[in-house]
Length: 171
Image 1: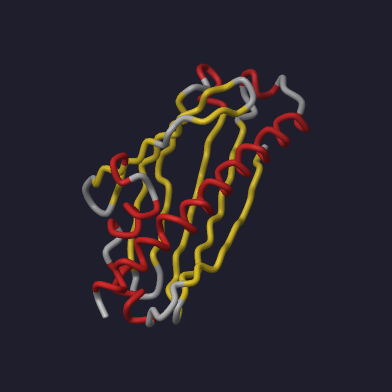
Image 2: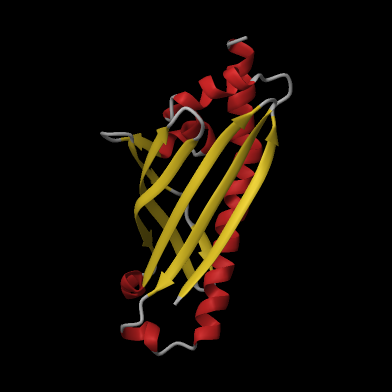
């Protein structure tokens, strides 16, 4: 069973030209460190990054996602694709859940357009087969809601601040 969510936002960057915002996104590490906690982002090889989120509470679980993702700039947009996600704190349930995310940040005149497609897939094997589908769906929807809330907050704070600061230094 899979739970899916798409979320998009427009981020206003006053007085920023399209070329300035393209320049900001052209080096993927720059917006990623603004978007995420820069102390928890580790650059790996080949445009890949490792990120360990801070823990958060979901039902009776203290969860801490750790993600390996790839990021690339193609001249039009920054693409972020999760390659592997481990959700620490699920214990034996870890093997029953797979989290996937793909996100895009596209520059426009005076704004950044951000979109993310997220999904949780529950394995039909093991204990997951014993849990009622409505409970799995509600829990998955709640989890994806927490993730999109956190992503939007990071976009509206860190990403905007990073873009504004970079644009101010690169007129």
